[in-house]
Amino acid sequence: MIPQAPFSPRIDPSSPTSNRGPARHPLSQNGQRHLSPLFTIERQTDIATTRVIFLIMTSNVVLRSFPACSSGTQPRGQTATRYPRLHVSKGVPDMRLGRSAKAAIIGFAVTLGAVACSTGGSTTASAPPSASASGGGGALEKTKIKIATLPAIDSAAIYVAIDQKLFEQEGLDVTPQVVQAAPEAIPMMVNGEIDAMFGNYVSMFQAHDKGALKIHVLAEGSRAAPDSLSIMALPNSPIKTAKDLEGKTINVNVLHNFQELALTQVLKANNVDPATIKYVPVTFQNIMASWKNGQIDAAYLGEPLVTAATSQMGARKILDPASGPAAEFPISGYISTQDWYEKNPKTAAAFQRAIHNAAKLMENNREVVAKVLPNFTQIDASTAATVTFPYFSSSDNPVRLQRVADWMWEAKWLTKEIDVKTLMSPTTSG
Image 1 (tube, rainbow, N blue to C red):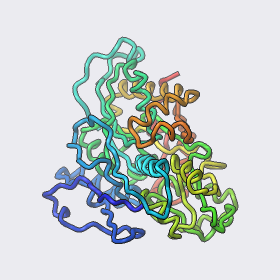
Image 2: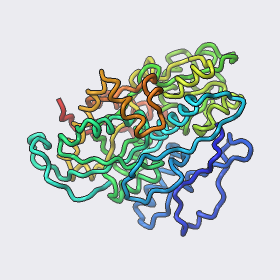
Image 3: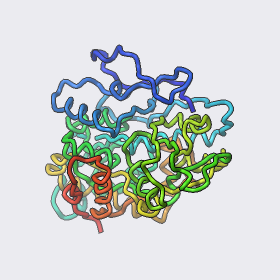
Image 4: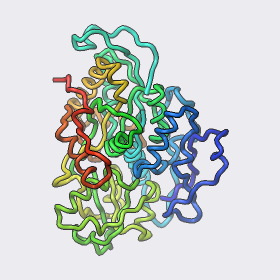
């Protein structure tokens, strides 16, 4: 789809960049313009914050802005009273996509937008926790915390924990702080406006590597499940097997992200030379149009778009990026700064227990996930009942997560190796 509504990022009117025109996306059509990431960031007067923004912006991760989640802009630091809604284009007329497909495109946009964009930071004074909240380790350092997140299937555990009162059982009052992109939330976390974030490991490990911030993984979040991601071809495409992907063009939401990292390993396992693949950044609303118009040869899709492409377009699955060496590939988790963790270890442990307990509840109870999705995503109840969910982690595994850092080092996306276990909390849940 070509988005009809313009992007509406938060721009500081006093910024010298606020009057510049937006950059054109390389795959935009009909003069449709997309703002470069530079225009998604408010100018910061704090030197440390500015440095964080600069380092994030100059990496090859988290470099593309995402469509506005609402027509208005939420004031910084205020809690959303309703979950934001994306503006939906009416689509390309000859694509013949039904309403469910359009909804799926939006759902996929916010899903990968959440894992491609990281966020984070602070809160109000805490109240006394419940007797069982701190697991016998004393009072929590704070009980009211804000977690930056975007509407996405992968982040469902936090909403299930709220819905099932699992945070309340730990003495926590958790508020999801909806943000549009990492550049907006990173300075919020650094400045202490939010306590933590839900974001993808590739982006955050690279930020950690560049010295933008020292991160701490509070709890693992989501892992790729079979068929939750898919490399797909149109019905009339000559691409029939994985080998046929050599020399072809495939979309990713941003270059050098978890999509590319996982697929590289799966391609090698299928005797396909990853170096022959051309990756191009395509905005989520443009994936289907770019695919149909031949600007990409195969589409890299995630749920709920996999289901929609299969049912609405007759698309064929060529390869599962979450298979073989990339099976259960860790995608995203709940992350704070190291400083916040050191100051709030009991609060961090209580948060981890609630997230793990939510994941355990979700393992064999699909209904609890489907119940909350329509409340914070554009995925309707009927779609939520059929899409493939990722795995939700009910425990933390440094060996599993080390795979991400090792592959990033192998790909030369890091300047030094990362020992993941030094960034993780001990598991406190049973």
